[in-house]
Length: 355
Image (cartoon, rainbow, N blue to C red; front, top):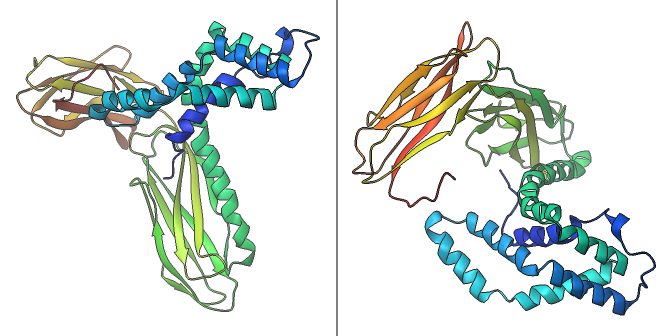
């Protein structure tokens, strides 16, 4: 699935945090301040003094480094800090502030962004944008894909399914129907998805004029919860619309919460018991036990009076790297038992804490 790029845009997000976070806080602006180019530039220079660009730069470097493999992060941070020129960022900030904001607005931004609340918002805005941008970009892509539909031979009943899953559902299956309204046969060349949890297939490959068909899309939920948006791309030999996007949006209820959702031991370290707590979030469900995929890990389920409980896991040996998972078996109805994973690993990777 296409995701919001967090490389160069992360720097833009960090800068956006410095400036936009203070918008709308004009109540504290100094009234009557002259709005000239000189006063704007003076206010902008005062802004970067009160809200140093190094704050945004450090935050952007942190976000960029977090996208790298753990073994590369320290060197990546060192390289960026040594090569990035703070003066370039500072000069660009001053010029942009003076170009787009009045002197009073720059003063208001400085007051807010240098406050404890403003600094806190700057640190959080990058993560906020990471959450907002993927569904926003997906929605834009979906709408843009409709622009060719008016000329296409295949007319789809709908290209978007929206729905809610029940606690019993482990997957969603949707049939997207269509009709060939053109004058020539249309061939479906492929149905693909960039997510392994989504598959798609047409009921056949060629569709003569006035014949219809359907593309079936299956989304396996696995451990996903909350709002989910997935799509498949249908490639055809119709020159008017060679690519069709079919999307499913579904709200998946959270059935259980496993905290933490992983247990990790260091190679050569102590084979100590690690505990994860299981909380039941739906009425009428219960944990029936646990199953482990790797015999090197021993697991014990300790149920509490609330129906939830604790999973206690111990590795048989930590001398070598190992990995596996443990399934928490949850009966969600008289006929349905669902599985929720707890991931297990003995690793040589140095850790500063859960990631």
